[in-house]
Length: 87
Image (cartoon, rainbow, N blue to C red):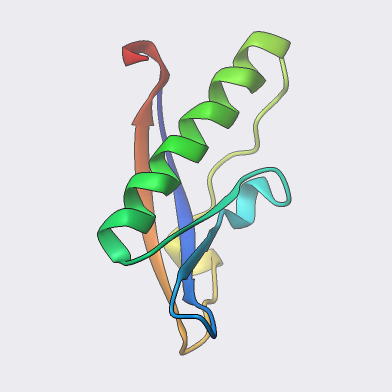
């Protein structure tokens, strides 16, 4: 199944990029050493959680729209799209 959830990317004090999914908090979080790495890690963390949720029958929340989420000036809001059927 295809999913798309927004992720918040925040650079921490060590220069790493922390990634959280507001709609799936506190269940899905990761980090990367730079933006491409953080995006790859975000997709991996998201698909891992979604596969687990599907197998356990956990009801997933509807993804928020961009307008519903309010990142601060230090954050980037990026949609992460995954397909659990390709894993």
